Image 1 (cartoon, one colour):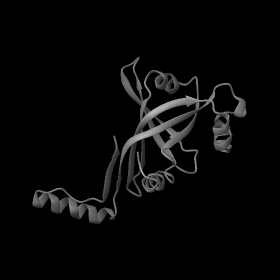
Image 2: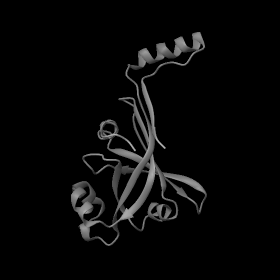
Image 3: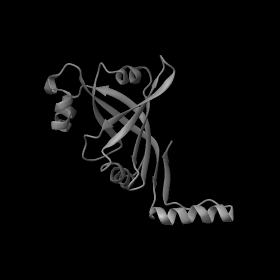
Length: 163
């Protein structure tokens, strides 16, 4: 899918953002639904993990439609990432032990043995990322220049990957 170097690039873009929006398809109400999720891992190998409650709406939505989208945005750093993949709920105790932390414990006061606790595993298949290199003043200049010359402004790095 993606090279180890590219996976490291994606990780470098999202690891400091920490929170992403998970978008699922709620086919009962025929709408897309997003909610914030917190990264728990300390590296990225093509899979993103989140803790979740197996009785939550997103768990049911994922059981019916495994296609999801994750978005990460840091407006101050002008970094934007969109990742699409297949989600799966797992009760893998080794994953739970590996990623358990005080933040997660606050959401699951019954601990690692909480019967509603699960891991959401998302295998990333494709995505895009954008990273502006210049400050906002330079960007405004480029936009004004593009408007005057009837061209598109060059606003930094953009890449699409996957299928």
